[in-house]
Length: 159
Image (cartoon, rainbow, N blue to C red):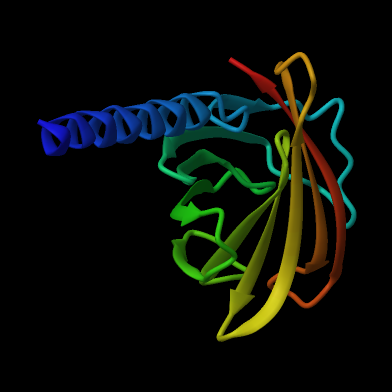
């Protein structure tokens, strides 16, 4: 009888831990669809993308990002990667300045991504979601595919 009670207690604890984990995952403010707000963004060097829509889907302790848009010349952009908040490199496609992305959580509303090309860091991006959850601001520091210094502040509105 004591063994059965212990097993039931352990099962309840496991369910509680899973439920709390799912609640934290569902509450990730990064998750959602975000559309570039060019008027509020600053691109250095410019010009920035004509358009960009990010679709961020939560996974346990991370997310899957798909970006669709048009670059400054009107050419289509497709960016995609899946990353956990563990700081480890993950393959990325569509980034002209990188082939891997590593992401870590800074606080509940802020994450930092490090992009590498051929194992060399090319860009860091700190993305913060506003307290009201309506705005996502990404600050880019590094070098673009042409080797130019990048200092962009890119603002997205939640859709």
